[in-house]
Length: 121
Image 1 (tube, one colour):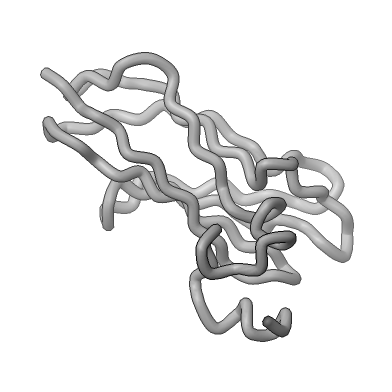
Image 2 (image 1 turned 180 degrees about the horizontal axis):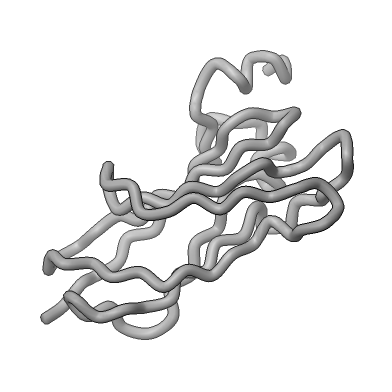
């Protein structure tokens, strides 16, 4: 797959080139149990191996969604930041929810990582 093709889609672990995906797919971690209406921590880092942040190649932002509901965006700058963030999130509906994180690499396009969480009363 040509690198220019990466900009024509949202890339995932399943659709992107394996060597590129390992450094670009957002990894979502949730600490503890998720209770409806209660804040919980969501950690998102870009890549199994943390993505580098150089002037010519860096992560521009991370967006977090619950399903299709927008929660937050964090912007990054090259060299002065690390593509990892911890957010405090509150979900108001019980059941299985899919957290979706999107990040954009200036050279390799948009990448998505997901994590299912079980929200209880």
